[in-house]
Image 1 (cartoon, rainbow, N blue to C red):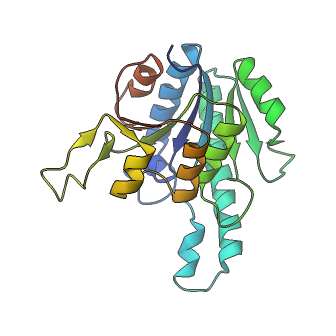
Image 2 (image 1 turned 30 degrees about the vertical axis):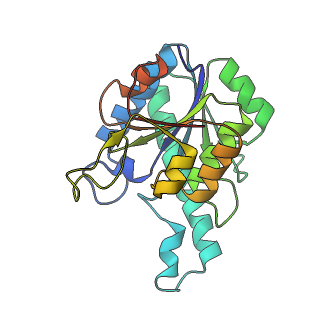
Length: 236
């Protein structure tokens, strides 16, 4: 395996599948099977999932009905719902898991403790990190970068609906090209959207590579772990 310990970042929207809201159980099972294949290969897998399919804190800024900080905490709770869904689905496939939250919820999960998370990974359990960083104004991209650095992951794998990073929107520009490899500095220079700036800078400063790939293509996750060129690698 090229990567022995990974952090997989999934958006909440990815779980919607063909729906306009909530969780598509078919899509949830597809992702769980991809994660199971990675786990069965011997790779240590951790996961961060967004909550945009249920609630996004920044939505509250549009109408000012809900305070931004309160809205962000609501978004964190949405990520916990998604994390519980993927946990239950993985366990139905006989994949051992642990859910750790940045916000204490003793009845349903463990608090995030770095050493314990690393130990779970070493014992072959998939570790799911919920509730973002536990702080408002930070995205789940930032949570993914932070947790990956803390557990000393080899790479962040950002599962998306596209095949990688393009020089422009391929739907609007036929001359757009897909990058196989690109540096952090080139992403800054060309103002490409990979992650939010805080998360991206964290990865750059800690020399943590990012791979953007299409999670909806069966087998992609395992191919990357084995060292095949899939998606786009962002590196120093």
